[in-house]
Length: 123
Image 1 (cartoon, rainbow, N blue to C red):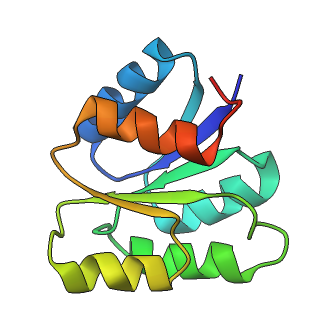
Image 2: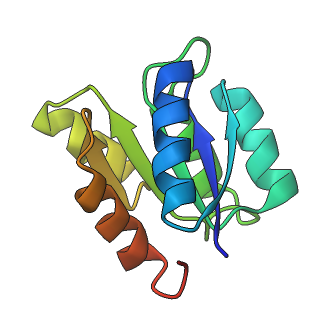
């Protein structure tokens, strides 16, 4: 069973994503700040990270860059999920090392297809 870490400061989004992902057979953990997320990725080594962008303190773009530039965490795929829908946001997120960029509200099938593409034997 693949382990997914959600890094998002919205309790509502965390609850929605957790329910959706657990129903699909994933083990889910969540933290509410980018800083906490970086530490959790380093200590727990999840199979995939779902990253929000707009959070207090460090934002998701900065956290993505930190994780993808660190040899210890660079192999963990990051999917950015955000309300930021400009093409420049998508390009910037991918340049920071995210493997996918999805805008909210999230289509359940799109998210699961994205995760399964990044983790073919995960679910």
